[in-house]
Length: 315
Ligand SMILES: NC(=O)c1ccc[n+]([C@@H]2O[C@H](COP(=O)([O-])OP(=O)(O)OC[C@H]3O[C@@H](n4cnc5c(N)ncnc54)[C@H](OP(=O)(O)O)[C@@H]3O)[C@@H](O)[C@H]2O)c1
Image 1: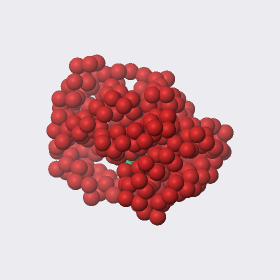
Image 2: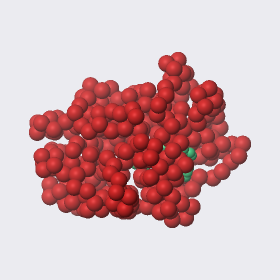
Image 3: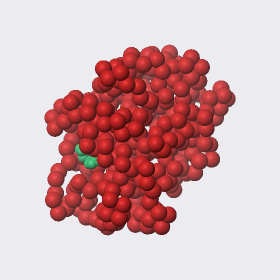
Image 4: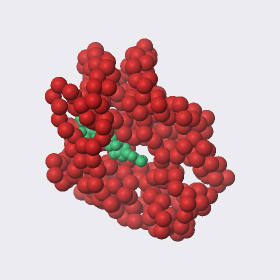
């Protein structure tokens, strides 16, 4: 199994993780209608069976339900996993005690004593300064309740600032979790990727399948409407699908060569960039397919071909 170290000396995790936002979430995804607890439980088992043990969740996913489900599955099946969860800086959290309390609740839902990674979900610092926040997180590393600290949706400058506050406490910043896919390449030009490389921060690529677009499931020929909030996302409209037709053609061609799906080729391209994709999966079938992004590599010229054809998505 391909593995990677988070940050400079964080935990070693599988080179591909799994995202669990859709587990229990009814606001964006349609949990409870076209899929539910049985499907996500199977996805949990299939993920571990395929050798992937790195799960991304957050206290706000399903308002705690994603963490609760993960905790329940681990307990019921007697299986452990490396969990990355997130703290949400809501306005009424303005002291370091809020960080400690939020972590206590996450650990309870997850039924564990420590998480591999604790990330700040958004760079909001209006109610609590980054300095207070990073110090509270460093305290939790010292207490042993989190193995490493991460941030999410931080700009290059915000990442540098967080890195500095943590470094003063002798704690490395392990990750910045940001959107990154063949159809969302902004981090390559806005300084995030370069700064992460300079500081030794691992990039976790969220929405790596562009929320399903890169799977090849949504096509003009056999138009199916996506579920949930994606219905109003113009990228999933007929004109949106027209714009990605060439990219999908190349993904299909490369997929045929390696006997892989467009999703697997897309995730393999991200791995070639040195980042850790965390594709969301609602079913065992999706989890198994996504795990097939590991164990093989696109040739250098194929990585370059995909880079070339997706240049419009750099902006
Ligand atoms: N930090 C943040 O602010 C943030 C924001 C967003 C996401 N995330 C994290 O990143 C994870 C992944 O992002 P995401 O869920 O937004 O997008 P994604 O991984 O690009 O897309 C996931 C969706 O694509 C479809 N899919 C996945 N694998 C498939 C396959 N093999 N075949 C066919 N369809 C497949 C599923 O939806 P359908 O079956 O309905 O098409 C699935 O829910 C989340 O779960 C979460 O952990 C973090």
